[in-house]
Length: 271
Length: 271
Image (tube, rainbow over all chains, first blue to last red; front, top):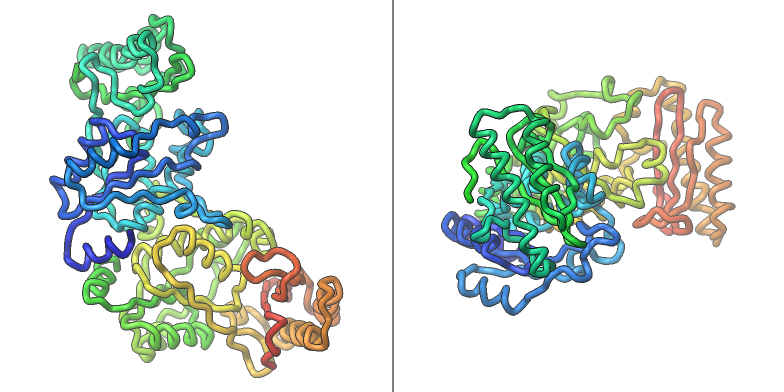
């Protein structure tokens, strides 16, 4: 992969990278389309990164659809699909880990210890392998976006982080590979996430700025759904995830499925 | 720096990087000479990396000789000198750190908590800035060599780690910028390091393989010097620093000056 990317670079081609864990949906494909629009060459990595899953998380049953993914990426006309094996990425004896401190200690970082270390390490390695000019991430994983932006600035490989809007189902549910875990009743219940964000955005639009009241609106909308259990509802700064910004972030459990969503309350809610 | 290096790479030039903290001596210059021999373009970084110094270490008084360094590097004909400021390297808000686990917990890592995190972080950033084909390190810092080799393999930026032999004074003392801290009596006492390594190599040459006995030879040679205080004397594997290899490693204090040295006992001692 590194040799291919270096060849592209020698030909003065701008390189776009879309890192994925496969199980591709329209959210991923919106990243691929943006990458194809903005670069001469596009590589999509497909790697279910074991070190970003905690003990007891869903690594083993994480959805995999290699043939579907391949067909989608071929149809999109990407220039390379990078599918390393786990031992390509983490050979025996490998022991290097990358940490972005501060922002990784809270919310998703607190709920999933080691998760962002796994993300930062694999993203560093993917940047090293593909030397992209631009790398594409979905706003759906808002804290991951903040971690990766900080990482890219700090390691300073010259990669611009491009963030694409969350793609949603007609009823507002954010696309996620993990939505496949939901049964019909859970799928219906999951719309409480986008409903909560919509209610908070509405209140913000009416001038509500009190973080406690915005959080209460979020929590109450989740608690109104009997199948959902709230993990956190916060309004934070989108870059640092410190309290007191305008980014509403939510994590809930529906059955055994953990779902997250977010929305910048400054923007009109798209639903 | 990144743009210059990318220009070189676009011209298909092989790039050599020599990372230094300045205060250049003949040991550094042997790395520069090797880099010039083996690459089309050579960049020498000069950066006293604050995050690899612990609290109470010698960051503030670390020797600095910018004009001397510049003259040496000009005379050697290097293509670029990369001298980032501390805020270039670590801007406000930066929070990313790279860790090579395992090997960094022992010996130098145990004696200097955070030291190898600082080294791994700055080396990753220097690799990102200069995209070298080869990077040059001195065998004098044997554990740093092992850490950087592991790091380079794990992050996988395509950098080959080249290791050059320790350069010594006529009496055997390994060149080190920190030798400048020694007064005349301490300077004489410091030769106990190379004397100890020579005695251990001699015993190894006679067939001695018992690690405890080799370590005793090292310790006794240090303890025979009244001005020296032994910090550690071990015989380890040069790649993993696990016990039981043939690399003798030593750390001592002479007055307030901490000195390290090492020798692979399989090789004849050069003194």
